Length: 173
Image (cartoon, rainbow, N blue to C red; front, side):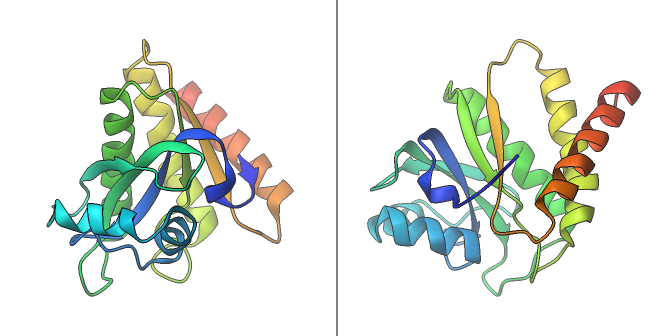
């Protein structure tokens, strides 16, 4: 877990929370589009529409990445299925990264304030799913960088994530 701007990391791919049309107007997606260039959204939209929870890959534009893994995190009106949709998005994004043999991805806490879920709830519910993904695909070599943007309580969140991951790993969840 790091604190920073997801668009600044030299990593194989960043994960963007788009709508089912491939539009990049949510906070994280908009930041990615702003840094990468508008062509990235045109490329994303040209391949849609997508199923809620699905993932797809585009080039990275001006980002210091190989590409962007987009996820359909909400419908065209900004409505999400909450934690279930976020789980599907994260799972789909990780599967896309593995399929493309990427070695590293940056993931923001998509679906958190102001949309659906509190940040600590996101960590408690989604982090164990990431641990489970890696346990179930033990041969995969993929680093996931969880990027938080200006949280007031970063150190507490890091400690919470450590505890969640340790518990998830111990319980087999």
